Image (cartoon, helix red, strand yellow):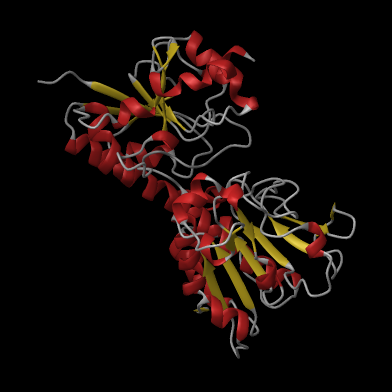
Length: 405
């Protein structure tokens, strides 16, 4: 018989608390059936979206102590004082971009001889991520954009996303959306963009192409989904080249301003490279023909592609107004001349049950067999930031970050 592998589902300790889990109760049961040499222990928690009793009902051990486990799995960064030495951890560490606020976390991981596998770095040979919450960021972000419009103009009333039991409950709520013949822009074609499209389609909003969006008037609400090539042009002339744009975005300039003159709502779901041009400028936002009055910045890039995203908002305090004339944040819904901004930076947390179910499904099908068995394509090795007290080969570039230089 193979050696027993003990996996612990850790209690989320970061503040504000995160209710998501790497595996749902029914998924833990499936794991222990599919992989007889795996035993799962769920650390007791009063905050996660699934109750301890739901795990117990699936014959999963629930304990306040998971120090006897070999592999510890969570979602957000583990507080430094809760790290257990000599273990393997999987979570989103937010250290790959040398985030200053997590430098001490990585130092402690190295000090405690922890093997850190970063969920964000789990990718196939083509560089495609194997696990992510992007779809639910898009679903909730677009929903919040519609909720914001309804609130600003008193057009309709929706439950908050976090008040919905799951994604099906949220989609039922979308039947209440009653929009005038306005125009909505959605940027991004990845997981986030596809999730946002689900919401817009569920709300019965028709999709149109960019030329129609720019030139036609409609008797119903419509949306357009824009990719980078729809609003960037090469400074030197010639056709848009997607690969070049990703490698050298500084070679391009934005002509997004044309869309701002006809759109009412912007749902920003596209990845933005700091070397790329902004979608539009603060000066353009002060022009009388700048029409957008609701911005749902799903990407939440502070001072990034959208000038009005001055700070993140929260699930409990989701909105603020931006005054282009003074470049200042104002109280939400305080003036018709302001732009109302939704920039929640942890959107999937509003639908923790559904988001966890999809995330866990991908972990089981695409990651777990490699983690506990053969990893022919080195997926786990390429995602491992630290091992045996040192940075691994693929993450040597973090050495100056670790050294504090």
